[in-house]
Length: 140
Image (cartoon, rainbow, N blue to C red; front, side, top):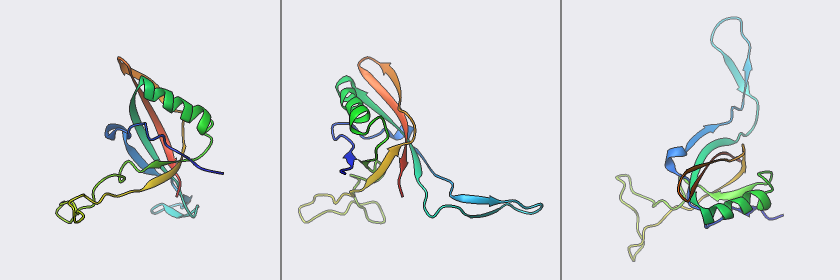
C-alpha cells in the first residue's frame, strides 16, 4: 500500500496557528504523600500539532479531494513536509546560510508521517478565502 502525500499545490500551514505537544506516554503512580511519581507507559508517543491553512477556492477543491477521497475522511496516514524544518536553509552558529560552490543555500528536507487527529474546522475569513484549522498526530 502506498502512503498518500500532502498535495503540493496546497500552501504551507500558517505559523500563527502552529502549536505542538507530545502525547503523554507516562503512567502516574499514586502516593499518599510526596511528589507525584511516573513510569513509562508507552515505548513511543505521537506528537499532536495544531495547524491552520489559508487557501483559495481552487485550493479548497484540492483539499476536499485529498481529505474526502485520498485519505478517506482522515482515516488513512499520509506524509507532509515538516513545516517547521522543510525548506529552511542550514546555517552556521551565527545564522549565516551555508551555501554550495555556486552560492545556492543548502536547505533541509524532512517529512512527517501523520494522521488527522480531529476533523478540520472550516471558516471563511472573507472573500474567496477559506481557512482550515486541524490537529495532526505525527507518528514517532
